[in-house]
Image (cartoon, rainbow, N blue to C red; front, side, top):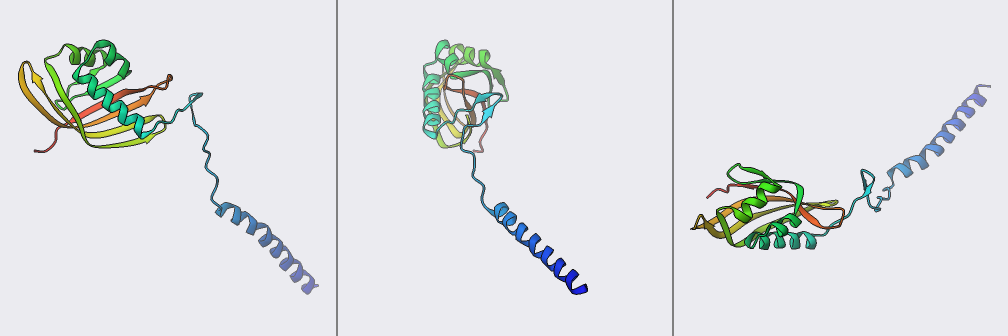
Length: 170
């Protein structure tokens, strides 16, 4: 009887091991990553590319050299928050009024040492903002750090959502 009980226990242990091994193998296997578009609040999230972001930055910089209200309105998200290296923060309307009618007139812009990080339909751009222009008629050169956030809207267009400039060491 003791032998039969011992054999039964061994048999039960063997069955358990045989059932657990496939489970361990399945858990250890790399799971397939879902490549389908993710949903954000019931809407399909649209992916963006580095080329699209580079083009958006270039178009935005060109627009700052020759700004119009209509052009800047089309390039900026309604929720824009625009931070200057001085600490001044503007909303969309304030930024557009300042770039079109303000005392600073950009003559040229360059985005040096640019890096881009993409997450879904949003891109974070970092670069050194180099500009030549005039401030109230006086020549002015600008060299500041810059972080911009672009987001693709429902129509598939990248728009500037946030920008923060910061002073660089000399």
